[in-house]
Amino acid sequence: MKNIVVLVSGGGTNLQALIDAEKRGEIKNGRISCVISSKEGAYALERAEKNGIATRVIPKKGCPDRGEYSQRILDALNEEKADLVILAGFMIILDERVAKAYPNKIMNVHPALIPSFCGPGYYGLHVHEAVLASGVKLTGATVHFANEVCDGGPIILQGAVPVRNDDTPESLQQRVMEECEWKLLPRAASLFCEGKITVENGIARVSE
Image (cartoon, rainbow, N blue to C red; front, side, top):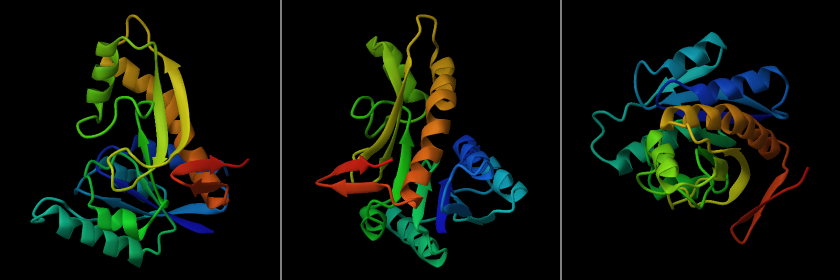
């Protein structure tokens, strides 16, 4: 059984999707063993505690620089014996030492179809605002491995939804979460824990 450690910063809707999927038996050979938050009082911590999942808080506030904070996170991941790390609304970009310590073992979900609308500055509602401003007719979400490049790691799974004429950034965000993120992330976690993802030359291959 592989240990899944989830990093969070806020409400934890993607964490809840993972918890619900685990309860339904959809994450095979894996369990959420710990939730680590970058700030005190994040509702994601309450979600974890309600479901008997261990929690830790490693506050970014007061940490002098990104390097030291990254080292604190890395130390915690090692202590928790993480097999898979999932970034679920974790709003801090860690430095390269974490990705190098866990190559192709850190997953992130991005609310767009990478390589579009991704990279520095594309997060949260900013992504959906950019999608609407561009006039594209399809958007969605991408689960990918995180590496040293922001949103640049191997793509594991993608899902798409249509962009509607009356969409607002908020309505589009909600639909992308419900129809893509909350389905793709648990599936990707299960595929990893089942050993069904391989990476060759920067390309992730899924076998089902």
